[in-house]
Amino acid sequence: MKKSIIILFMLVALLTTYACQKSETTASGSTSPSTSAELAPAFEVTTLDGRQISLASLAGKVVLVNFWATWCPPCRAEIPDFIEAYAELKDKGLEILGFSVDDLSEAELKKFVDEAKMNYPVSLVGKDIVEAFKPGQYIPTSIFIDKKGQIRYRHVGKLEKADLIKKFEELNQE
Image (cartoon, rainbow, N blue to C red):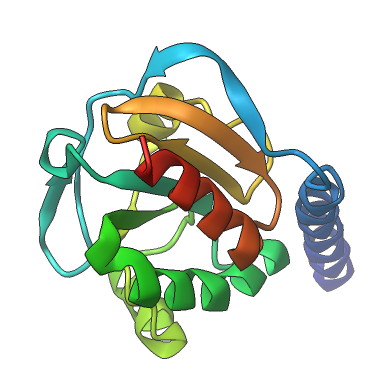
């Protein structure tokens, strides 16, 4: 019994690591423009600190929606860049929303967010948000929404700070 539990745990860990690594390898050059002017789904989420955020409340800002999980190495690796970019660009019109797809309680996720010193809003989202945004099968996935509420770019894999800033500046000049 113990042996089968250990084997099952190792198999799950291997598959999880493969999925995250696969998303990282597919990330090279994977920021792609949306095929057409696609309106971002209207959403409303409650952040871990209790604030309500909706697409309508972010009108006029460039929004980066990042689908991630605490167990995903590329997701964890991009957090420091997001923290820095948000500190630098929040007052210039950037909003980053961390949409966690973890299977954790909000308290456990909040503990992780606090320890990582994440300075941007984070929400634990369900299938309804995932289905609305269609981020694909790999995380991290980052979706850029322009000031008019249209999805403009999707990036699969770890998003580098320089690429985030470049896309923000491009969309912010429109």
